[in-house]
Length: 254
Length: 254
Image (cartoon, each protein chain N blue to C red):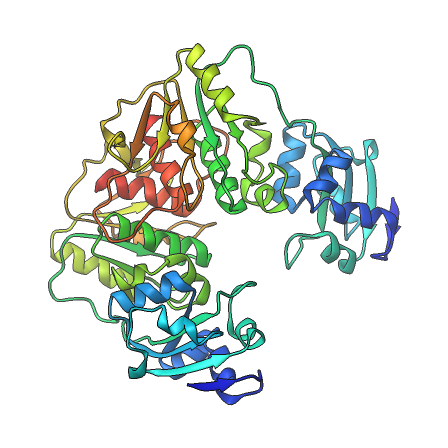
């Protein structure tokens, strides 16, 4: 196991670059951190390239043959330098991002969540986790939505990327594919065309689009869905948090 | 309007102390920031003590007679010093926290959310916003739950504290009060005693307890509810985010 004590080390510099989308695209890798997520990666055969720990004993505590990958012992200072959190747990893994799926599967079925231009990484991660918990088949990250492997998205997904397939792509093309497979598509909006979600009959197959926190789903996408939905609100809050709204809609359909 | 340019100014020091619970309890005041929340405070007659801006013109843009309160012009540096965000909008207000309700109303009715030992301020704020959107009657902050006026709670409530009554108190006493008023009470847990939430018949009146992110609702509270509920999950995620779960349950009942 290689020991690294300086933030100036070249490998540390490379790891830190994984905090940026550019760094992830260039290397084809991303960083995960914390016991829960690293254990999930191991359990689900995540493509682990390297393990990085602040304590050599940590490797013993993993259900994983760490001789098969590169391992690094780092100082708490280096851990803080490469971490996206204030108080790192001292365990990290480098994974390949090969599970970016860019192309639409030829056979489509089941239930799907599409994210149009969602800005908050915590909201995105929470929605992926909700889709996972509901047993949905996949999540599609559309244009403008924060990158799948953004460290804050990864943190709030809590390992759901190992359970559910994540795609990125053009939501118009995905809508056309769902239509071809007779999967009903739903947008979310608040206007005359939309119906209250509890008036929509739950179906086994469906594809739901959630939209930008401030502006909702793009108009050109709403025009292409089979039906648009809203959540009736009796109170004074102007809107629901987008991840809460997604949870209400998904669990209505599932 | 008094102009303040230094972080060492005594008033600035007092404002910054409002970031801590101790500072809020000592002064009986809290700080709100950003256009949306300040406008909500004005619209709903929030008890504004002072307005603090980085640009004197900002006061003109408010639907508020700012001559009735203290006003301060500060520099962007001071704004950053007193703000809980990285990129402050340059508008703040100091409010009295008099709307801490400690005692249980004599007449209780409608729908209520109780928060037991919830740790994440974002989750708390999102749940208050959801309760507000759903038109619930109040939210009770139980033991261990982050303070109502924590800046991160305030930020994610997005002004809902001006629409819905927020209480803090002992949830056992609240449960007894709901029972006295024949309001059905529900806990959330995952065990043999609990039933799937969609098997619980929606009722106009109800009180729901959401629990700690890791440990759920305290056992002694679960023992005192009329019925405990769980959300059936088909997927692999171990749990839902607590605010998403609250949204699903609340909108099932409402």
